[in-house]
Image 1 (cartoon, rainbow, N blue to C red):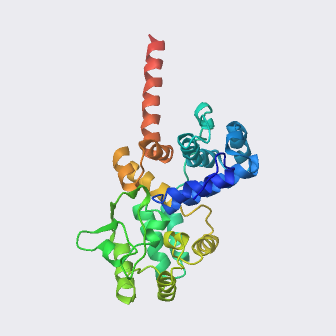
Image 2 (spheres, rainbow, N blue to C red):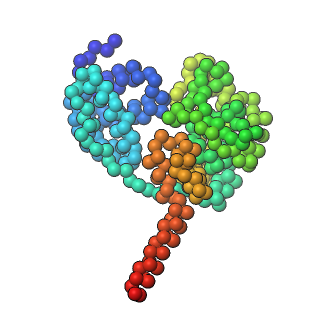
Image 3 (cartoon, rainbow, N blue to C red):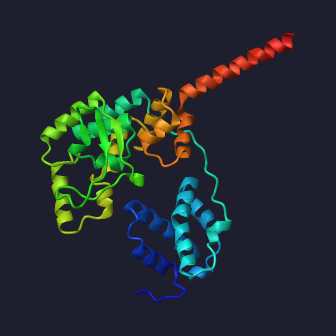
Length: 318
């Protein structure tokens, strides 16, 4: 039972997470990270003494991107609202300070030739399936790592991104980001490799090597499987993907597969709303970022601009 009337910052995060048990592991991780930056900036002062939100944002901006600063701010502002409700402070200091403006950058996309080089550089069928799914569905890394056999519907040609629960003896707790189930396309090349892996895998997680799966299952039985392991059950995922990129001679991130998928969907005539639903974005503004990599949109704009110049030229001739 906490009895502090004016807790320190380190005590606030402890109390907050103790009562906010419904927060997802992703949210908890991000909140802790953002709060660590706050304590490093302001020291472990009493919560009512923290006022310098602008200074905190500037401090974070020295080491992380403007987008990350906005995410940190969004993660910890609710803690101060909670402190207001608990009467630890009179006002949320984040109310009067605007977040930093996001820096708009055209997202990187993998060209078909680059994807082919990445695919050919994959060291195993597991990884070929991973990059195929990422490139043709835009699914997040965590969603791909947590796919199980029952998520694949070969007859309908779809991949289902859906909840898993600890109550299932052969699975662990995992939920899609924003708790939204989705149905994504299953293309034949991916289906062929997935079918091969499903037939050869003794576990429901057909993309996980069996030894890794049974190790994680044993940790789950002993209560030692961490939230991070449940989110990202692969071992050394990022390190392996870096090796693949080096072998392929390609720069970029795994997340760029989402940009590539979004760009192709927009180029193919899908609306922003449709692409938003496929990617599982909670806001259409997030999806709008991918308009910057939409070559068809640029072509249309170029054609319109050219026609305007032709009209202007005819007016000058008159």
